[in-house]
Image (cartoon, helix red, strand yellow):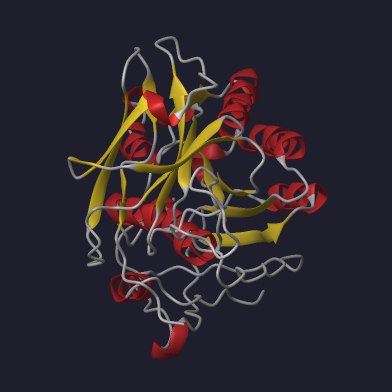
Length: 360
């Protein structure tokens, strides 16, 4: 199958990281290319069509004047809280109060989903369950303007279906995921003008989880605008990734992708020692505005988890502000959204990277 070529990198540091990967994404025969974002779709404080300040724009890009974030609000029992206004919240960046420019409860903005399915040996007994319930979730969640892609990861990373709105194609892609415990392919494949990805055989490889999150963020989500969510079906165990969990988190944050992790594990596979991937998955989800949901190997729990994600994605608030700090030096800016009163829990990403403005 033809190899995936890296799209233009977000920054020099990311491009260097991409070159360090010893992985290849391969398209399935049915993979489709996604359209390029429409020029001028990024957020600005004053829009050319005269939008009012309370009218949000359909983007999460943060290399422009307005920073926008999607978030959920829950009560102490975990129930979603609707019908709040911007007067209910305080907003701060790096500890400095910010003025809220945009605020709206969103349920119908286009949604981009990425389904990342673990096809390593540890998922042997639960993979069919993941395929069945994942396809049902896509069928019930995707609307006309939404799109999704499917990636499987094990010793290799495979793009089984690129962006599409077709549930039948996505279902077919999920069914293409197969357990793979063999040796990693080392064919290289060009990645940008600097030549092939370097190849190395050092260290064990079994589940290139962190690399998969990085590539889904960098090669897929980073070129899209609007609401974006990555759903990982995995036990959370990484073995053999060339990148670290911090690299995966940074890539997801720069791509504005919310990460949900459905922790699916056949506990009998691990024996007495159990598994320990949940702590790193909690870091990934919490810092991107998602969460970890424990599923085990129960199909009903998996269905409930997908239902919860669907409800959260359709019950988000969209908040936007113009940062007091206007310097775009590529640094990470911590953003805090706090309720002015009430015992509310805010589920939002931890911040953003103030990347330099792109030159047209």
